Length: 429
Ligand SMILES: *Cc1c(COP(=O)(O)O)cnc(C)c1O
Image (cartoon, rainbow, N blue to C red; front, side, top):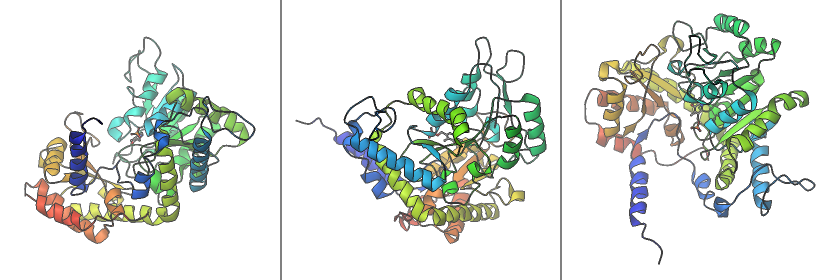
């Protein structure tokens, strides 16, 4: 007799039903295509493969039984490499954080210094003092704090007055002054491209490698609608493949290094991936990555451009509806994200909860200048998932009205469900 799982199935069914009736605006999520979902349920789920795929002449695995795993892993690597125009791609990290961990393990040691985006400037927690970069550069006796004599040698990019852009002259001066072991660009609240060209140029003079964390924007990069960090001089691109990139939950490291640089910057990261940050790497999701990569090759440009156009239309409509949108002077956004200030609507936490009750799902977020991390004044909104469900700029007005009404305390739940009901078919697959 199989065990009784009806309660488990009921929870899954409830999730499926509820989120299909929601306007999902979490900037790090998406709904994967039926093909991406379907290929994940296979025998690969129970298997192991560590190391690299075997070839006709080399044994690189530590287990037998990997012939089809080898085939699919090589395919994933090859097709991602072509999509990104990257000579090196590692598809084994099981998430964006694991990809960052691999780079940190490979390249950094206690006492090394780094420059990163601070958390209140939108940087990811993995970049922070308590994240993998901070932990890795910490030596015994150092505090996980910046500033002061026992501080870890972590520095933050100086920002321009609007707080959404790196102050390039000040950043170049900081690099000259600190001569860090590595610099990290990219972030989680990510509205505008980073000055990769300028920073990479000066880093080259001092042989400082540049990590670009494209976890959020990989789909926009792959679709050619955002900056191209490897072409602009980044040493590595790390990313999640399930935020704007519509794949299964995994990560990658990519680079475009010549053979000499490969030894210096790719070999250590390779060991950072395995055995550093993952061993077996969730093989059932590898075929799904291949499928998503092909979807991006076929439709990525259309999807990425539509996503950014929607974000800009949504931002304009929200501002017009009385919800203050950040970075207005810069056209609000050049990514899939929009940042709004809801200090006038009870603050980020209360606003996000009120919206959830109306089936509008998003997350509260610190905005530049927020003093208390427990009282964020913003919301971060991402339109990539609803774009995949076929919403266009004309729908963004309706979406903004619903959101503004919900923030003002109106009950818009039925209207939200009705709007979402019109967008159930996934495109770009
Ligand atoms: C989400 C995110 C990550 C972590 O990715 P996971 O796939 O969730 O582990 C890393 N860096 C940035 C900038 C992110 O936003």
